[in-house]
Length: 304
Image (cartoon, rainbow, N blue to C red; front, side, top):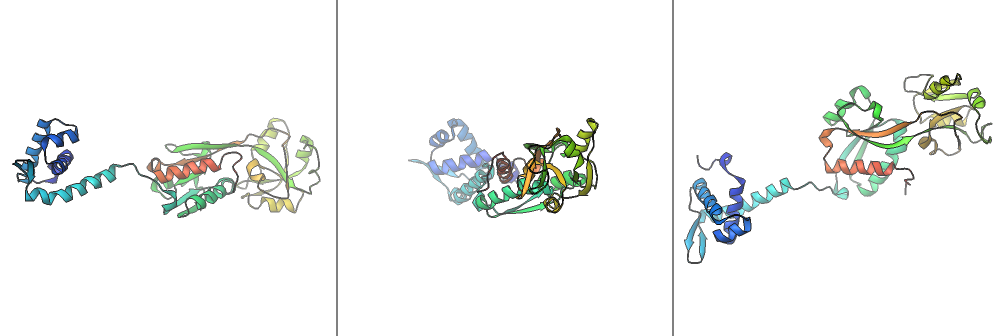
């Protein structure tokens, strides 16, 4: 069968469109940056494919046949559709309508998701946000299957074969209520630090963390009187007790009526990063949201 779409070359349609517009093999060749013999050969193939002369020689160029005239509109539409299909996708934030799912800890909720959503609602109000807990055993599969679009994790907890980008480096400080007995001290000594009762945030209910490892290396220890699984309740506990907590600086800076003091020993911090799957790596909407996430995570970014 001659008119089998599987045998149709896209370049033939471009040639037919040029011939219909120009009414001349010579002018069509110039428009397509081809030689006149090449266009003539394509016209021969077009005639064979459609089983019609398509163009008849006349005194002033070529006259399209009735069949060619019926093809004019559809050919232009097909070429336009293909052009749209092959054009780079353009993302318009204000017109966007989508749901974006982020896997985050309560720490990342406070430090990253809050400013990100504030910026999103101003720049792309049609984007809905969904935040789910970080489920490390299932995270790679969730990202692969589209259940999660981006995860706010650390490089050490990022599954292999994912894309990742560091957002910032976090450090630890000591936080206590403003009326705490130690709040007025010029600095927190190591002896005072170890004597105080501490609250530790641990998702597993552990009474040991990075601070204890650092103390142990110095031959010292502290008193951990309470372990909780969320940073969100921490300020409430500190407000009603004389306990203190070693917390990420960015989180401590977001609480009123609290005093921040430098720890009397070096406690290793961590890198906060975002991770995503290859399936959304080149998507313009996802690229834009990730760029915005990186922007709001920069030191000194202010919520307006």
